[in-house]
Length: 201
Length: 201
Image (cartoon, rainbow over all chains, first blue to last red; front, side, top):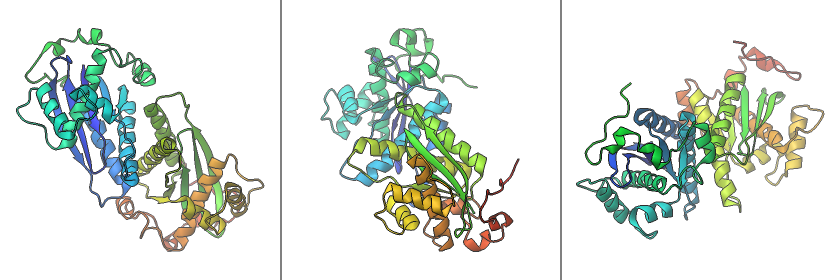
C-alpha cells in the first residue's frame, strides 16, 4: 500500500509518500511546497492545489492522509491552514483516491507512541521507521511522512475504510484497501531499499 | 461589468450574478448549491468546486466576490465555511477571473447603508436595487446577490483593482476593470430588464 501524506500549510506544505508493509515501510518521495506570502490567497490556493494534484498524479498513491487542522491561538493562520487542507482534500477527491484526516494527536500517538511527542521526537521516529540516515528536513516534510506512516499503521489495524473515509472509499471503487488485499501486490514485499515506481506511463 | 457573488457554505452555498451599471444593476442569475451533510468532507468540497467552476464558466463574470469567513462561536462550522470559501477562491483563480473577498460588514454597509443590517434588511435592499417583485429566497441567495452588488458598487468607487486583488488582476490580463472601461461595454447600458447573455459560445 502506498500512502501520500500532506502536512497542510499555505506558506509551507509538506508532502511525503511511503509504501508498506507497515512493519517495514520505505520512503518513496518527500517534497516541500511553498507559496509566496505576498501573493493573493486565491493564487496561493491555486498553486498548492496544482502541487498536490501533481504529486497524486506522479506517485499514484492508494490513499491520501491529511493532517486535520485544529484551532490554535492564531485564528487567522488556522483558517489559512484549514483552507490549504481543504484544497488537498479536494485534489484527492478529484483524483478518486480515498483520503483520511488525522489529528496531530493521532499522528504523534501512532508514530511516537504518545500524544505529547514534540516535532524532534516525531522526526526521529520517522527516520527510524523509514531507516533513513538523518531526520528529514524541514519539519513539514517529516510531519507529512509521519502522517503517511500513521495511515499505513492504521490500515494494518483494520481501522481504515471503516471509520476512515467511507464515502470516498466507496467512490474510488474498492477504496482504501485492507492489509489482506495489499499483500497481493508484489511491490510491497520489498522491505528496505527504494520502492520501485508504481507505473512508468 | 458582470459580477458573480458567492455566499460560501458547505451545506448551502449561494451564488448570485448581477450586471452593472452600479446605479441600475440587473439580476442575471441566482443559484443555491447544496451538498449532503452525510457525505465525506472531500466529496462535498469537490461538489462545491464543480458547482462554482461551472457557474463561472456559464456566466463568464468579469469579477468574482466572495464573503470572507469570520469566526463565530461555532468553530467547527466556521472552518467548514472557510474551506468552502477557499474552494470558491480556487475556482476563480483557476478560471483567471479576479476575485475579491468582502467581510459581512462591508456587504451590509454597502448594500444597506449600515453595518448592523440584519438578513431581512439586506434581502429587502437587494430586491429594491435589482427591482425584483419579491425578496430572493433563501437568504443564502440574497446574500450572494448582496456580495455581488457590493463589488459592483466598490468598482464604481474605484476601490477595486487597487486594494482589491492585485495579484489576481495582474494574472487575469487586465483584471478587474475600472468603471471607465466598463462604460465601453454596450451590454451595460441596459438598465432594467434582463441582461443579455454575455456570449453564447
